[in-house]
Length: 482
Image (cartoon, rainbow, N blue to C red):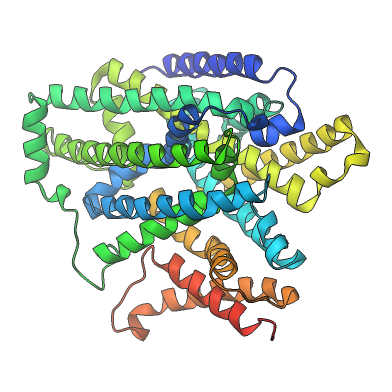
């Protein structure tokens, strides 16, 4: 597939997003940027959140993950159900009751100033790293198949991508993203369906034949019973529940979309609907991953060293021009949600939690918008730098690395919210940053030496739970007496 064709697709798709931006961002205020004037239709939010939560990581990394872990990732997805129910029944009522714009303001109400800043800081750190991982995966493919042909350096490719996102989120924020996510999710899902259809067709099978072939293969193994293994099914199940809670319920980006709904009831409908769609879509992507490996075996195609590269390699080089075009459209559709929501939520969190724009009424609307614009541009530059650095050190499947990092950065948030919601204790607020710093450090050393300390046991995604537990214990030690 010619790089010029991919470039044209990229330009046309971007033009579509800017058309939506022009419609939605007119007369947008700070309130529209932060919470969409609390007027977002919940079905649109639920559907669009699929694209935002999956992004390029699920689109490319999960199919490649099947090669080494089979369908074990599905146990994580089943765990999501319990996490999303907790969000709908515990966290959303709390956020709506307190009428929050930034969800971390709860920590100030519950514990105090330093707890509030600690929670917000860990979100900023988590989202910068997570968004960079997701964006890197997609931009790297565009670099290989498009921009390398024009001898454009990787950092320039990233700069182009981020500037485009910066422009179409600059004014409308969450009000714009709600509608662009709708378009992007649709194109991404269509791309997955068409790709699977073409694989089945090239192998001379029908859908029933492919289903039989997948479930007769070792790739379909969902439950792994090795207690010491990283993908032991109970680890995955528990990890999935807590990953959903922290990476959705305690994440400003995902909750900002929920808080833009008209009411708590609408937000809860959104979460339940989103849960059902998410389960189906993730299973479909795992099925596609197995089909990709079976196709590679059938056509004697060598599996690339990085499993993330399998889907683009087959789609662009082995399934014909239509498949390549469909893949690129899906990839671009997955790319934008991984960055636009992150950039908007980072701007929101820093503007509210650290600059207190929502409380500085003396500044006036125009001055607040000017400050918000500066914050928006600053975080775009930070993402650019982190993506470039990440390309130099990446050496494993991004989905694996993403959840590993989440275990360290989201763990203190899990511990803080658990302590606040399930105990009546107050803490010595000034010591909270220290507890939140020590906990990930302890987890790192336990993870590095787990095989020696725990007789061969290896930590997987459940490291997040351990991190939250250590934070919880630390807060218990620094609680106020009486």
